[in-house]
Amino acid sequence: MNIITKFSIGQYVDGNRSWLRIIDSRLKIILVFIFLLTPIWAGPVWRLGLVFCLLLITFLSLLPVRVWWRSLLILSILSLLIGFLSLLASSDVHSLESSLRDPNELNVILASHEKWNILEIPSRKIGFISFGSYNLSKKSFELGIKTSTLIFTVIHSVNLMLLTTPQENIVWALSWFLNPFRKIGLPIDKWLFQLLIALRFIPLVQEEFQNLVKSVSVRSINVRHLGLKKSINVLITLVERLFLNIFLRIEQGADALLSKEEILIKTNRFRTFQKTTYLAIIVNTLSICFICIAIFLRKLYGAL
Image (tube, rainbow, N blue to C red; front, side, top):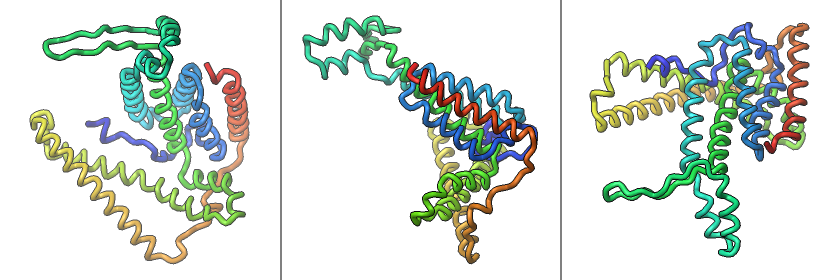
């Protein structure tokens, strides 16, 4: 319960200790896109390398451990669970090939796939229930790795950026990249202003969730002693109350915006300026070098 109430993701944490805060917000967005896009059509070795790189950045970021360890723990468990489920749910190569291939080719294909099987469990019958055979092949193992690493890299890379970058700087950086689209008449400022409101709304949702969890603990509701049916009813009630509180916050925010005139602010005014120091120049230069090296290595070893 303590982990749940203090769990936070996507919230900016103020401070000056971490070197991640010094990196320019435009470079951070490029780095995030590297972690988002380079896993596409990449092999498991490259994906595992991205996970290791993210973990190394997290441990060396000088961020307070209390800021990221809960989200990292929950995300790791979630990624491993989804990867394990995708590994078990992956279809067998034999059944797929038998429906698509000619019978004369099937024997050659099945013979070539014998060496790829990591684990083979024959069909068994326990009582009146029969369990079919299961083959854990190399392809299904790679699918589990790809699924778990993709979820981890996507969520954790974005979370690191949100933890160390003010929402205004993120919107300003996106505005800088999307500036050419203004020339063709696209309402970039309106879209990014809506994005800023959505980013500002994340802490409110987490606050409502934490308040509900605390209210349950204050009332000394022991879910273990309620039974399955009552526990489900309590869960449904909490979810309903959570959405009601969220929609109430949305309505209050909408009323506040409608009560003001010309609320739309140009995104070039969002950036918070910082003094240019030698440390900032060094960190940003190293970030550019890291981006170039990552693109070069992805081209050479991305298929591994």
